[in-house]
Length: 300
Image 1: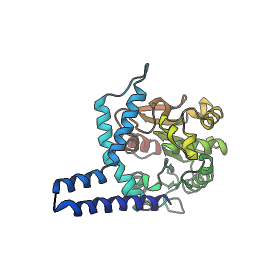
Image 2 (image 1 turned 135 degrees about the vertical axis):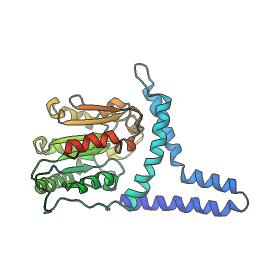
Image 3 (image 1 turned 90 degrees about the vertical axis):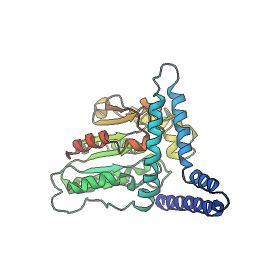
Image 4 (image 1 turned 180 degrees about the vertical axis):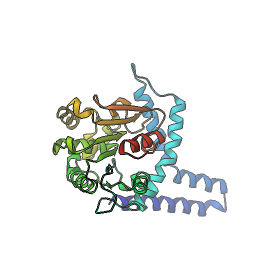
């Protein structure tokens, strides 16, 4: 469902930009080019607004806000990264790399991975990661979290099935790699299934473990669950121990334009790792994050 929606949005924007260019080019090439850029690159203005809000929230007394240079670099990085994900991989190439979690020779004895994407995403988000695992012949499964705007707890059966398949293929407890809301889905599954001993490690990237300021504007169920100190998040935290959280590595950034304040992407008992000057989607493909995470899986 999400892939179809993003296909429609992408093609509609391209059609509108192209039509503007054709209509105005003869009379005013400058106006034609400016309108084309405004339609095709308008999303970058929304990103800029998110970074300004981030700076305001992080700039409150007692906080240590990112520098304007860091914010500019993060904005430019996200402007490049976002269309690759939301206008190509997810709408048109979501199944480019199918799951590798069946009776395939060589998978047994190598650590498998379950990938859990975030809000308004699908398995196509993980394509660079999936290619890396396929090259090294590791088992993996990447879920699609649907219904897109449903409650986070409703995704538990999807994770249960993916973990079961990868464990069966590899013969080992898998690593869970999660971006954004996906980390909360993993925690909900761990709690609902009492499954902490069924995973080797959990890696979260830009996950709003304690909510995010931006979620106050959400009107959908899973968005409301990600509000700062929401009742759902508090209940989830109360069900966990520090020892259980020690099985997490939490990557977070001081320039995350979706999950802020930045401290909300950490867990008290986890290995919390800060990457400065990197935006929300960009963080999932940052060289340091991918290198360290793949090493945890057993890929050097």
